[in-house]
Image 1 (cartoon, rainbow, N blue to C red):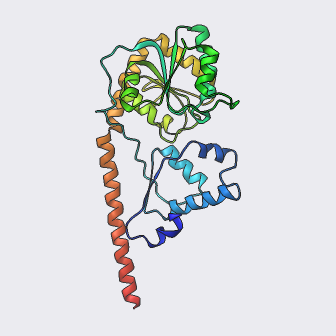
Image 2 (image 1 turned 60 degrees about the vertical axis):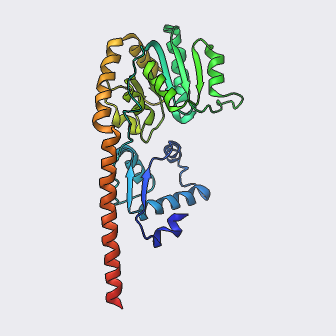
Image 3 (image 1 turned 180 degrees about the horizontal axis):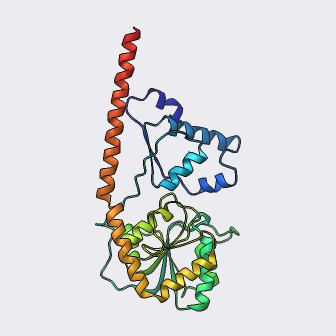
Length: 299
């Protein structure tokens, strides 16, 4: 409610960071984002907040463009400040990688592409039965509502092929990034792509959907592999290609690591953020001074 109550009388600048959940894209595509009354009122509040804020930044150009379209934003600049990665935390390890291991990290739900991945798993295991899939993250209910995704996958393919790790600490997750052969990110939409960045920083080759911030951050066949969202067959082919081609994995890993250090290192992102915030603060001060001067003139 601060869009209505606080923003008109603020004494310090208000900065908004756009990093919405993928469901916004789904609601927009299905014409539900502005559905009356609850969704529409929420949409109006969010739109007013964006329009009235002194600074709005986005985690990717793709998501900033989506917000402009979905919330009907015209004429407001939205600088892109990417998601930062701390290379002191997310970095390659000394342990050898498990050649037939595939890691999925994140919420086990529809928006993260679990249906697509489940279909791909079946195809991969038929041709490469030695492959092992690791899942780390919060486990959500499978489509039938009677079991979770991990329970469904283990029942379908067995505990030798599917391992559910639960929600891991950062240290434990880094360990799996460091030893997995591939990190798969089959999301239907991603504003930014934190998991992909973390895996890339740890030297783990990434196969991701060509959507949103993922398609911006990953150059296909240079810093990772991209496949169409929702395409289980393409995802399976990409996974099997990476499993079979160790040299390709190593090349993607090195290029991705260089890209992370060049564009997404936390030190660089901090400097970008400071520059934009300082500019906003000075502009806000100047605006307040103009208002005070205008008020005195009227008096």
